[in-house]
Length: 227
Image (cartoon, rainbow, N blue to C red; front, side, top):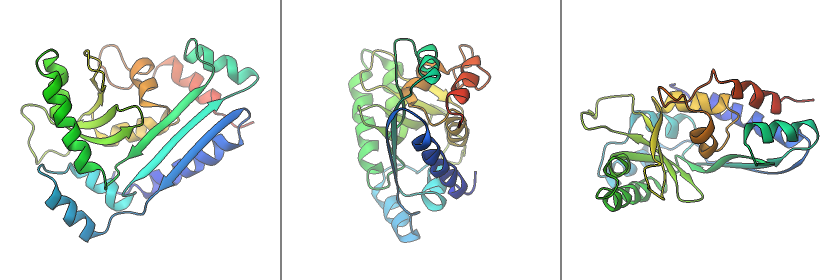
């Protein structure tokens, strides 16, 4: 995806949609303008690793930092859809924090390296996911999404798999999508629900990536249909 401005426009429209739906809700969307070339040059100097090309594209054409989160407790028939999608829940959470916040990318990369070091002895695969990932989505509970560079990864590669990085460890971190672009498109299709919901309920058991063919997707789209 070469231009993320349309992706941002779709998110703004979704915000208006959810605000018009019945039930208790709280929605936050803050979008910084795209990064200037001078700011991108400073970021390159501050980083000790190559910035993934897809993140560069988002920073330039989409936003240099976007905070998005929503809480929605629907009423009426929609309430039963939520409990069917997420057993034991009566509300749905979306977004969850800052996405591609240019002012925190360097810090979050350092945090990922620290978690990787902490986890590598007891959970080596988890440690590798953290230490070899470039975080782009900072969730409010300390979890992150990052672009993962495997052992044989080359800095020239444009496709970096997306990893869900669980700050509690215990083997819960995992690859959830094949690339940044694939994740962003699938996330929009899933109504921007929390990555925790995605990791738990919307992954294909064979491929491990987001399953847009799941019957749950139809129910989720039904939940967000306007009256």
